[in-house]
Image (cartoon, rainbow, N blue to C red):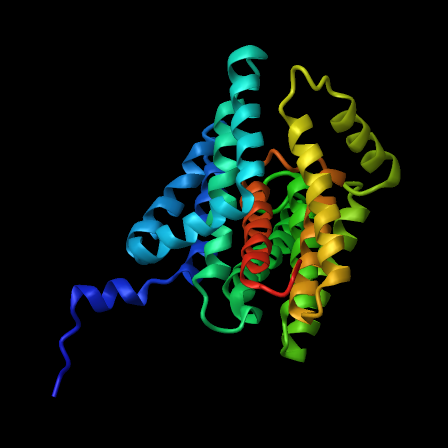
Length: 290
């Protein structure tokens, strides 16, 4: 006897676990199509998932998120207003308005996940593995940067992928495969000159010395530093080993983005702020952290 599948069943089959792959695919396409100036397009998957995965439950998650991180949201809103209307920094409103939406979506991965948060990164990991392998093939045969489109974004993605592999992949075969693929990609990039102490130092200095009055990247840098300090505190205070891993991943992802000057690239923005959101959602869920 065939069981009828209702529209409600189909809707409930869609969960936040599908969001990382869908969102990253949108981010990749925006970069490939040269729509990088339309950063607010990254919010479209968020609103879709908010609607189709349960408005009532997602609203509860949103309220919890706002209550916990209200000061940070106020800082981002005030900064968006200043850089957009006073400093008139191009794209500032879109970037600073998109960041909290991406972070909230990441937090939903943690807040709406009733299972072990160990599995949150599984689907993203598989998709990133495919992208890194395709990048290696493109590098070897076409002598070109992979599908993250710039050397800075490619290297940052590989570092984050390697970190996710080491911290969250339980299967030893997957762990070995991920580390091997990351190592090959990293070696190719070193060989091609996309990595180097002088290059990295120059990128960091260029990012830091930009005028705070005219570049909203300054506020992102400050918030990134505060976030890393918070993650280190959580790492020390929390007794939850999984929470410690989330904290380590946040620090690695932020450091990689800053070191490679890739925080303003859409595909890296999506990955980074999704990871930050997952971490912040885990902090809300972990009642033992004070």
